Length: 362
Ligand code: AMP
Image (cartoon, rainbow, N blue to C red; front, side, top):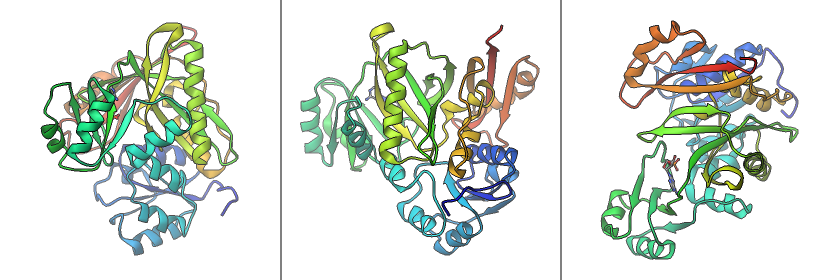
């Protein structure tokens, strides 16, 4: 199955949330069908795809039937169980592959891998017990963040520890789960590099974007990120090195901290997302090729699209009841509404986003 996937073929997507939905829409634009696999019978991606399977990620028979019915498989979330990936890979190509999944699923493996490539990260230590936490705090000194190694997202599974705080309490808060302690990085801003690597090893990065979070959830992404040229080059080079070392195929997002300001600013990698990412949503209107199309191109073995920005861009997430502003957004000139079609607007739930592009000529 190393030959190209051609229009008319079917892309299999594990996960049926908004990312799966936007991937399916991009696939449709390229003449492909999609088949979504998700345990939730009310998945937003089902509404826009040719087929779907409702089953657990542990259901081997359902996974085999799904993989057998598609031409290539990808996913919209990094917590795909290793066994699930193994079953899929025994039937059809899975992109990005198992190495990217295993690395991104475990914060300790991720930081060890990135640091091993000579790319700066926060200082870190593995922590498996209260005694190890006490030792790690002493070694790193200063404020720190304790994170579960697995299943953390949007700031969940994290405890901030200041000098003098109770070690026992911090350890208890994570419930004894294997953890990583990171020294607190005094960053000036947070940015990400969204990029893609093709099956032929070609690489294309979007302009760096500047991310602001609220309550641990991405609130606003802005492009350009106004990094000094050398800082942005270093950020892109780090993303490229990571994709090469992983033998990566598809879109990746590399979240980074910026240290310092202006010409002398440097970056440290915080996290890798082996998939299309919320901080890349601006590319749908703000870049020559959207991250969703780019991902489909990459996993199908097609040439990557151009990644240039079409102007100055802002992407704002619509969280929970913020989606109720959809009529006003539709009435705002230049605002592009993306409504994920989710039935219930629970607090903290990503319901949609809105993108505004200020064209280069304006
Ligand atoms: P994460 O789940 O690793 O993406 O962390 C969520 C947020 O916590 C990040 O976007 C940062 O704002 C903050 N954060 C995480 N790790 C660190 C760190 N080592 N130093 C400072 N801030 C951090």
